[in-house]
Image 1 (tube, helix red, strand yellow):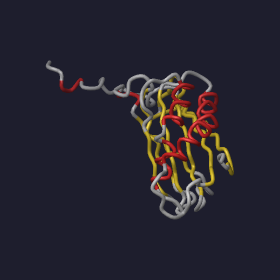
Image 2 (image 1 turned 135 degrees about the vertical axis):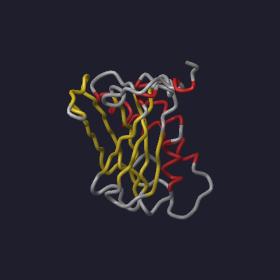
Image 3 (image 1 turned 30 degrees about the vertical axis):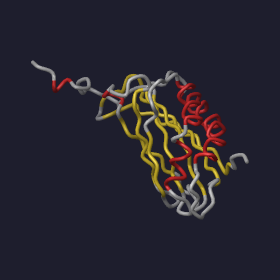
Image 4 (image 1 turned 90 degrees about the horizontal axis):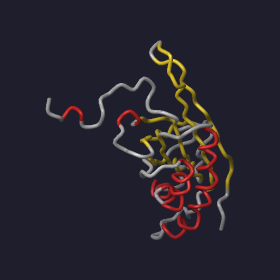
Length: 187
């Protein structure tokens, strides 16, 4: 059984100004998602892992490297998400994205070592999904803690899942907070 894909979504978001100031370098976030037919039956099944293991690498290969390519430069932060249509369970999306066969493809393409931060939920068509991003090599790099949002008018339909990878070329625009833990260090 392979993945049944209704559409692939690619979006590149560039922030050039923030609070009236130039953003250098331009802050870029790439989103690549696959809108797939929910591979799980609508009735309850106990084993979600076997199917996720079968499909994880295929989904990862479909969107992970494409996300890195769309960014068009070095990835510094990354994340993933699943938005499940109302005919499915949040656990269906979780099984697909919290699977190393999926995540390792994206992590490898991005040159990362950290676990991919994730979000998953059930939603109606047009529901937004907020995707957390963290630094690909050090999840404690505070400047790269950010959340980006993807919203598509006709996604997901009731028996679909949007699986998405997101990558950024930098931390937050105009990031200027102290490094992680700085507030607890003795002065």
